[in-house]
Image 1 (cartoon, rainbow, N blue to C red):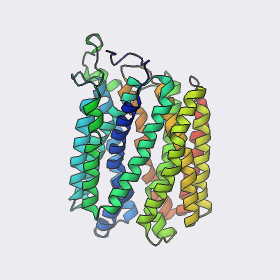
Image 2 (tube, one colour):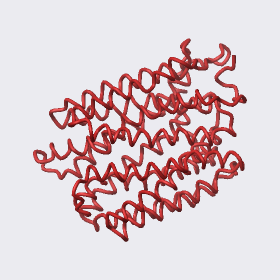
Image 3 (tube, one colour):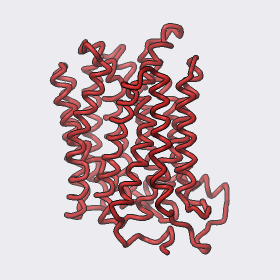
Image 4 (cartoon, rainbow, N blue to C red):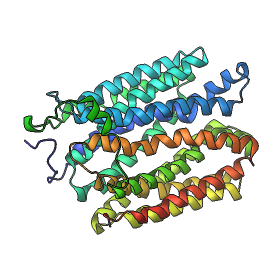
Length: 412
């Protein structure tokens, strides 16, 4: 049997990819149901008694959760790298993280105070990041390099399907508590086909590391000077994700307060659906095309430029039809970016032994924007020009990320 540190050579089958993608859907349901709808509704309920606006309160809660996510993803990725259970390196963390995430969502469902809401969201981030770190690391463990664009495409599709499913469950379940409960059930059930059907890879006896707390902690720093491609790839992902986070954070409030949409929650669901349709049209195709031509950087660059243009549209044309157009164009660009950028990231990983930890460090570029976005967005919306300036800033940030991918030298 292939061991965990060998470079994979045998292509993975469709069943494996489907099961891993479903597990990914489940994790994103646990994140996006709260982020898109439920946390915003709770923020509205708690804001009157805090002296804060709903925007500021939501920013503090999501920011606190993002701080937890920053540490949790690389930490659990590193733990999974060193796990020697007979079930493999990744499976124990997928199961434990998803179960903990479901319980944390149920805690949020019963939150009667702001501190419980904040604690619940931080626990969701902690537990689901354990599961996500392990799911992500399974790809370089099992998938050959020239199949990773395709598999990354399916995982990208899973992310947006998770966003749509989570948003849908939160919207139609019939209340905040019911929305959280529905997301919790899906989060736990969705990982079962993968963990029950597919055996995980284990470390060979000779590869098992000697535990050292000092070495464990030092391993989280990856010098950009020693690994420049890793550093530039990380920065590209961070900037483009920050741009996207700025677009999403106040979407519900943008529709309600700026566009005066008659049903802003339904509007969020419609925009998410439009974005999802166009994303799904490009995410797998873009990844497979990148595999076929053997190139990554041009796809990442031009998808980033397209997303920046769509974000700028939200700044200069603030109407409901323009929001639909922007959502569609963003989906086209984001689909290509998600699949190909993921493949590019796996191509710049320094060591096989540290795949989980290094991907966790890369995934900080997903979580850190959740911290930075509220810090940037709240003062811009309330004091520095409103939503027009917010989306213009987001467009500039995204464009910078698209340009900087050219600094990656070791990947075509």
